[in-house]
Length: 337
Image 1: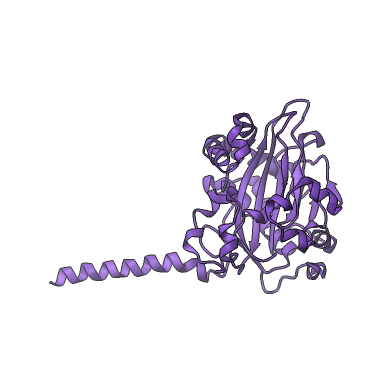
Image 2 (image 1 turned 90 degrees about the vertical axis):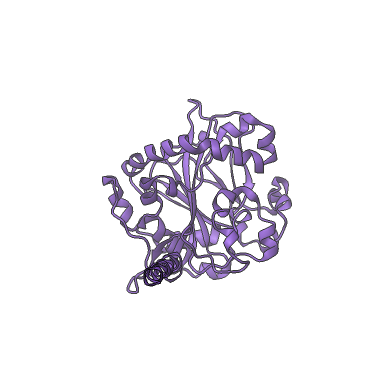
């Protein structure tokens, strides 16, 4: 009987340890720390000098352009790892896109023109340090005007050359995201110099503030004629250099034209999305009505949660926690949303 009891005791101890590890994310008070494996990654661990005017623009218009956010050399150092990861995994995600998007399901050529691979940060350790870097995460916290942020997802947006129907239709990012609240943003990162002909994004300025518009079902909210009638000023930043980024609010309507580059090059970009730590999920009906585009991300963790529960788990890692003695550029424009 004695050895058997010892084994049972060891099993119980192991169970306690495992439960503690599984639940440790709930009590985590600091963000993930790591040493960059790439020399150029050192810049990503330094904060960007964000000014109050940038925060004001983000909350007023719903989007902001930040030139020279990182150096071209930093982007060039990480780009090969993104390209390799996309090439390795794109076939899986193209099947998902064809299944959830009827138009793509009917048009194999269109599926092949737009390569999306979700959660790059989990697929390559080099991309983990890129996406989870202090430079991106602190920027998100400063723009959202919060003290801590979590990563929602990152993904590739590789758009092949096309002169026909490969435009990105009008949409906002919260239509497929289960997060409630207003502290959610997307950072759009070109991986090389992108000309206007390659199809940089167009934003419907102030659309993130239009509460009446936001309450509409997606088929009306994203209708191009209706958007035009609402009179939102349309902003396109045109050509962007490697190292430039745009950031837009989760409620902001945006689209992009086809990639009509005369040299027929692929337009390569990565999108990184953060939300405020402590954010609760949407209500039950909203969760049932979610657009399925983000399922490669949400199916990994959402089934474990109840509606309106605080969204904290290892699949939504804590990316940045502001030190108590650190100040951020405060903007009153957030109060208008």
